[in-house]
Image (cartoon, rainbow, N blue to C red; front, side, top):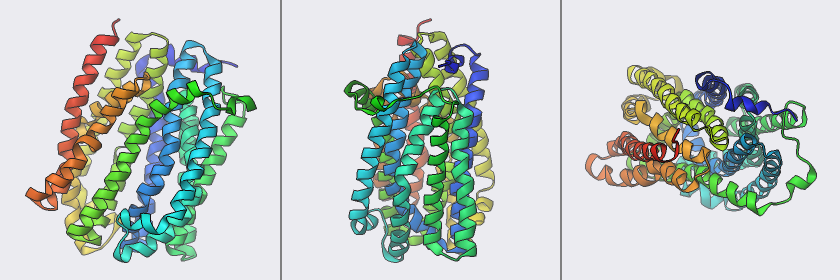
Length: 446
């Protein structure tokens, strides 16, 4: 087995970060663009209620898919450090356990999700006119979620091997497939919400097939055997502690959707949920380069930390924050300059066009500084320190944002919900910056 991943410990950090971050950014861009265009198609070809319906279903399916992401990132941290220290058997054992636990957990969650379908949808804001289209979309999409979970798990392992281009392709394939199928099922066949759902589900299958092809081909260094699939409690324990960081973050995202959908429904009805649906898609889309830098940073930090190359770890932190902050500033300028034009792409509804641009400006107000929070939390996860990674990951939405959306509306009405975004960004960045700086001074002594 050729150890091509050794480039993570030898190439110049600046070049390496770009090499890792650009494919990750492109992959996230295409995936986010897929979600964005999907929302545009649904909004224009079905209607604004359909946007609200998808926004209700998203956190439920997102949580189940997040199990795969959590297992992927938790295991990828172990694999990166194992490859960095030359322990290939541990990398193989970890990947085998990732596959087994992903299948077990996601299949169980899908069964429960379908069994409690009529209870879950109203809890997440699927009330009034939103309930029926949300139910149609939810049932079909849930069938494909295990494939999405396996794909997200495999994607992170591919990146841990130091092969970001293939990770990028694994995100591009389903995104392009979904857009083509959207056009066929929604526009040509007039299948409505069911068409949107089947396009999404089939695209999950396309992603899974590509990742399966990668690991079965000679392009992958990680060639597991049947015995690697058996549960190893040492690996599972470490993977769970690190993966729980990601799962907790994604769970908080789902809880945030739950609270936001219900609070906004009470304050502004279906139109406010539709506004949130548009802004949520823009958050996924617009931050793609910042998230790409964060994803590219993870294997570099983990590999070099595992090899005790602390000077390279410090440089990777500094450069990742610099690159991500610069990109965040560009995003901020674009959003602040053209919010009306952006919203008009999604819908021609007069009420949504009137209220969403001002909300969007508030949501993106602190974008230039979020790099510190994202890179800081990612660093602790990359080096295997689960507790600080978990706490820092939860600072923004768990410790600050969720309490604020209950407190600020008492003083500012519905606008208080939107002001909560930048306030939580600033507070979480201050906390993360403090602990990251302390850890660097304490641990990364050159």
